[in-house]
Image (cartoon, rainbow, N blue to C red; front, top):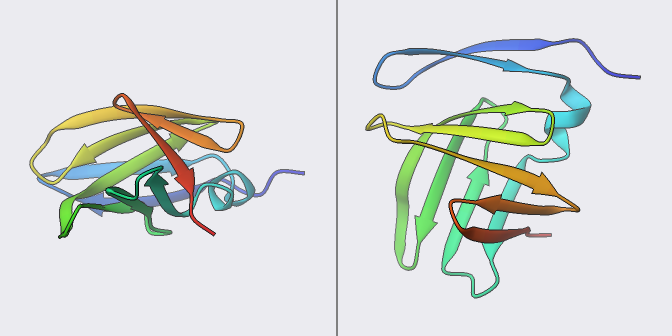
Length: 102
């Protein structure tokens, strides 16, 4: 059974509304995602924000995200947008392959 729809407002460079389908769906994607070599670390936070580190640079990119089913749309704080898909426990995003960190 799916939980209720969660709606949150997140401010980036303007107002951005996030509609998350259900907490069950979102919870399975929250947390840290990393490339195989560990260079890119992408944390999906429960408030609809993300924080991406690259190499030694912590918080290289930050912004908001929307999850719809197994698809994720990103908008960083500069206004740049990107997307990705979760398939079989792997996040495919902008040509990168990221794995959930345990």
